Length: 270
Image 1 (cartoon, rainbow, N blue to C red):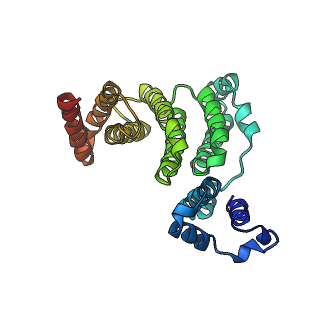
Image 2 (image 1 turned 30 degrees about the horizontal axis):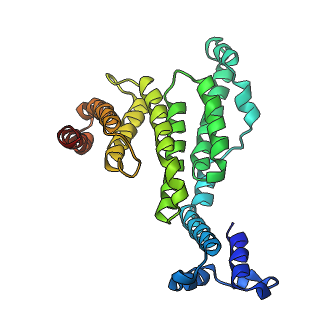
Image 3 (image 1 turned 120 degrees about the vertical axis):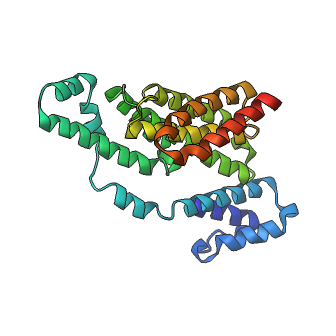
């Protein structure tokens, strides 16, 4: 992406540079030069500069991606493996008494989750990630984890959109609210499949993460153009989630207080 935009940027600067080896020209120097002469930058050139800046930021974000990928994914995974785990196949596997089938099911799901953790960091893979999550939701429809993974993917998309807005790409703003709403819907589905009375390890992950998202919704309600009544409902559910966590772990007390303060503020000021 950077190489393509670098060429476009240089073509704007000078048609004589078409055959120049662009690799020897520093992108950061080009951007710095244009920042210093911002008033003279035309619309097309500004778009190119903006895309380069966003891509550079994404590269910073994914600096450790290769290392993380090697650490997270130690076995290859094929989509066919997921396709085999249909509902009927799963029932036979889990209740047919075949330990090897159960182990295979667990292994495939673990490999899939590891792959999704990496894929969510790569914007171009988000659509594939959502497709994979959809398959997991069919396979394990009663478990919260597949819906939690969907929510995380949507939140990752939201982070990228936020980055674009910060980098002055205002076209991204219109997608922020719908993306956040998709994440909230997925979180609610995960919450419905989680225990509030006796939360296990997987439930705790869902509850604590949603509590964080609830406070995020409160803090970023203006940027996300969220209606006050919607934020209030999210905070109420966030309070319910964190209230379920505090009795067994006082580390969530601060989070509980944050949400309580946010709720009081919403009641008082709307």
